[in-house]
Image (cartoon, rainbow, N blue to C red; front, side, top):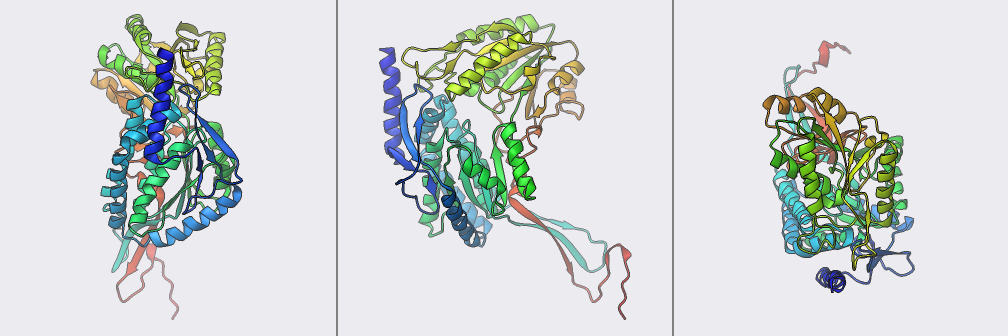
Length: 522
C-alpha cells in the first residue's frame, strides 16, 4: 500500500503540474522569441529523483540555435533599453503577480524535478515573487552620484546604463530562484537575458520562460527572456567564449567555474561567479542550545544537503561537545526521509545516482582519513522508492587536518570538530578554500562581534544565531575565495548588470584642466 501511494503521489502530482503549466511529453528547449520545433533534435529525458519515474522530455539546443537566439536577444535589447526604468519595473511587477498565480504548481514542479520537499519547492517560487517585488522598487532607485569637481564651473557625476545581453547558467539545486536573482534585476536595469538551465531541471526552466514572457506579449513588447537547454556543457561553453554575452552569471562547481573564468577572462568579459560553499557553524558554550540545534539541523539537512549554503562543518566547544552531539544525533534519528511530496518528510532524495556515489565515496574517504562515523553513512532503498536516490543523513567526527574537510560534497554529511578557544574555532572555520556562508551560535556579544569583525569569518555571508542556509533576498548573496566573489540578489548587486559612466560637464567660459595642468595653444 505504501509503495502504491508513493508512486501514485508522483504520478498524480505530475499530471496536475503538466496540465496546469502546459507541459508536453516532449517540450522545446529553445526559445528564441518563438518556441523552436522539436523535430530532428536530440531528446533529453527527465526523470524525477523521487522514484526514478519518467516525467517528460526536452528537445535540446544546437550551436545554430545559439547564433539565432543571441541575434534575437540583441535585437530585443535595442528596444527594451529605451523603455523607461519605472515602466520596466511595472512589467516585472506583473511578472511577479503571474508567478504568484502559478506558485503552487511551479513549486510542485520544482519538487518533482529536483526532489525538494513541498515547502521548499513553494519557498523557491516565493523567492522569485519577492525578487520581483524588490526589483519593482529598484526600478525607481537606479541611482548615480554627484561628485565634487576640483575645477570651477564643472559638474562631475556618475550614471548607470543597461549592459546588454546577460547570460545566466544555473544549477539544479535552485532551478528557479537563482535565475530570478539575475533575470528580474537585469530586466529592470534594462538588459535582456539568455538562460541555460541545468539539464537536471529543464522543465522548470521551460515553464518559467513561458510564464514570464507572457507579460511582455501582453504589452506588445518583444520577449526579453530567452532559453537554451543543452546536455550540460556545449551551450554554456559557447556562452563563456562569446563576446556577444555582455555578462555571464554562472552558478555551479568550483572546477567548472575555473573553466568559465578562463574563457570569459580570455576575452576580457564580465562575469559573476557563484561557486561552491563549504560552510561551517561554530557553537560556543554560551549558545542557546535550542536555537543552535535548530539552526545546525536545518543548515545541514535542508534540500538533503544540496544547497551551496549547506552546513558541512560543525565546530563545537569542548564544554558542550558531548551534550550537543547527543541531542543532534537524537534529532537526526527522528528526521523522516522519503518521498518529498509526503507530509512530514524533511529529507528527500539526492539529485542522481552519481550524487549517491559521491556521498558513498565521501563517507568512505572520511573514515580512511581518520574520521569516526557517529551516525548514518548508509545508502537507502526505501519501499516503493527503490529507483530514487536516498541516503542517510550522516555525522562524522573529524579533525582539522582531514583533507576531505576542504572539499564540498553535495550530500547531507556533517563533519563535527571540537575547539577550546574562539580564536581556534575561527582558525578552523577559515581554513578551507571556499568562503560562502558562515554562522556562530552564541549569546555572548563579544564572541558575536569578534566573529563579524575583520578577524572573524572570511565568508561573504556571516550569521549570528541563525543558519548558514536560508539567506534573504534583500542582501547581496555571494562569497569570497574559491566561491568566486560574485554578488547577486539584493543590496546594490544590480550594479553588476549595468555599465558605469563618469560624466563631466563644463558650463563655464573657460577650459581649466584637472590637476592644474596648463596647455596653452595661443
